[in-house]
Length: 157
Ligand SMILES: [Zn+2]
Picture: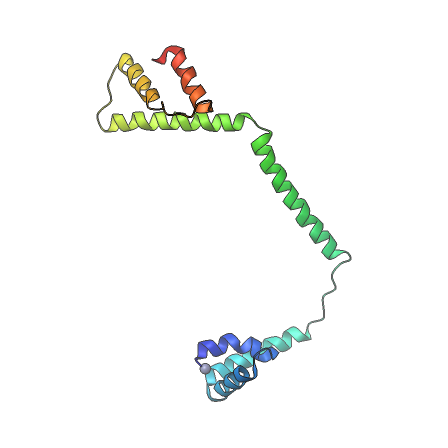
């Protein structure tokens, strides 16, 4: 048994939680290894100091109050998530519009960086209209489709 293995089992050795065979092996190792014997002595000292501390008395209804706070915390989390998702119907719309705007802006920047960007307001209008056409596979009835239809109807094309 290696020193690392023995030292990992010293706590259980002191508590008498090892099997008979492991207790014998750890005891044998400690009897001939000064490093592990020193570690065992340190651990025994800590155990003795902990044992000399007076027991701590929990305040009345401690467990009940902790459990109540845990339950309240869990409920608050659910309420906050519900509030974000359901009580603010504009949030998903704002996120969708933001994502669409990001995609369009990214596409335009990409064209500009690669040199494919055409100058002039008419060319820009044509470019935007072309980009809208690339969203032709949007699921029918989706918010994205409605947005693209609305943008197209506003004579961007
Ligand atoms: Zn050792």
